[in-house]
Amino acid sequence: MAGRSRRKKEVVRVESAPEAATERSADAPTWTPTPEAKQQATRFRLIAAGLWLLAIAGEAFAIFWVLRQDPVNMVLLIALIVVIGALAIGGSLLWKKANRLDPASKSEPTRFFVQNQLGAIITVIAFLPLIVLILTNKDMDGRQKGIAGGIAVAVAAVAVYFGIDLDSPSVEQYSEETTIIEELTGQDLVYWTRSGSVFHVCAEVPDVNRESQDGRIYEGTVADAHAAGKSRLVSYWQREAVNYCGYTQEQVDAVEAGTAGSGDDATAPTDEETAPAEDAATP
Image 1 (tube, rainbow, N blue to C red):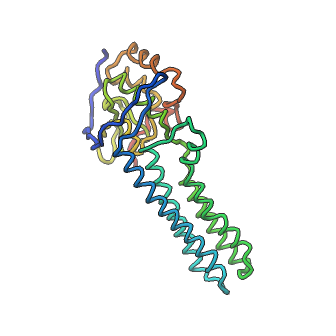
Image 2 (image 1 turned 90 degrees about the vertical axis):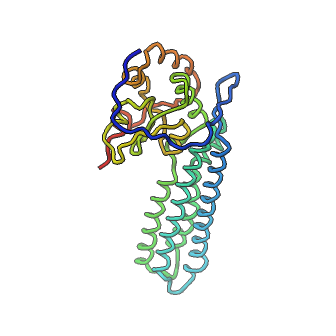
């Protein structure tokens, strides 16, 4: 077995709930969240729903009261637009956190899409009618429409950006990643840094040992890593395992053979992974 690289930073174990279950079926193991994770996800979703309801209530107030005034109170209208945007963004961020704790399955395409893009959908609902009514309001002149409409479009665009999830988590992804790590290392433990976007096989890889603001490497389960905002297992985990973590190519090949054909590209490379430097220190 190849020797491990020298670790340069302190490793901190993340406090986590009891490990998520991986149910074995005839086809492939299926990851399921712990009751604690589901409870936390439900709490996040309820808060997100509350924020979204407030955003829509703000939209209704703007439509049915502010825009019916003559003259229209521009300061109040613009303030409402900003507040609606902030509420929509807050709800979307919490909803994404919930999805990382309790993801949907790709086997249900409609639910998978709606659950992961709900923030963007709600944002459109909260802004589109308001923007249309601002631009068609008879009590506002062209300059007022341009200012209020432009601000509304800009705020809506930012809120939609935060609502869209282009790298949606899935049960299939978590299942494959957990299987890879458990079959390779014998336990569900991965490593990441606060500034990085992915997680790694061991604490000796160069990516997590680059200089960072807090000087720490975090250790936890695959579910913990996702809950911390890490999108996936690094795409070149095979190279890490052999070159830095002490595993042989034969061990890596055996793991790949065991997970081949699972149907979910859990470790597909992203733009951030074209070079092993995604955990470089932030300025």
